[in-house]
Length: 250
Image (cartoon, rainbow, N blue to C red; front, side):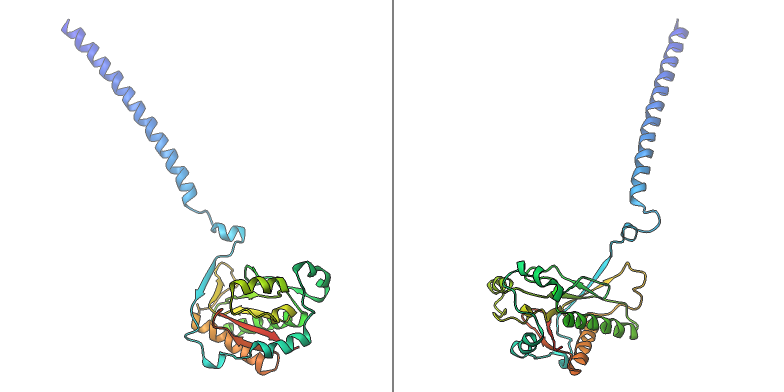
């Protein structure tokens, strides 16, 4: 009798142990599958997603004008630049509706490897052909100077282009420095920020040493001074808005 009870108890324990092992194995299997799924998403295969999709990885270099060479604090005031703007520019437009009607006289300005057009709120991305050419020359000379000194390529940022009368009116409500008779209305003038530059770090041809903000702002200043000395442009160093205000003289 006791032997029968002992045998039954042993069989029950064996079945219970089997069920326990089965449950443990099932739980471990689920955990392994979950871990593999997590690893598949966590560990990139080959290049990162930004390189696969072509999305640039931007490295911003910010700073003030504290390290700027005094030679590059240009003082060509608005009245001086306005003479050139009126001579070489378009007839100012009342509103943006008129841009299409003179599109053949203008060049649309788009971002490139050399510079980036900022998100424009009070201007539209157009310039006269001579102003567009000047912008391209500034960008090319800026990149050449960086390359000659062993630095990587950095974009400067264009913050303002052609403005209509409506744009100027709206801007003057939020910016006390904005003038009523703005050179920007003639399509001859653009602004380049000096407080921020961007390196596209994911592009394979962007090689060379990293540059500090001081190097970048003085390189831009040197580039502008050479063109200004050649009579190609007027330049004003703006303090309220951290930018160079540039007007073509051709």
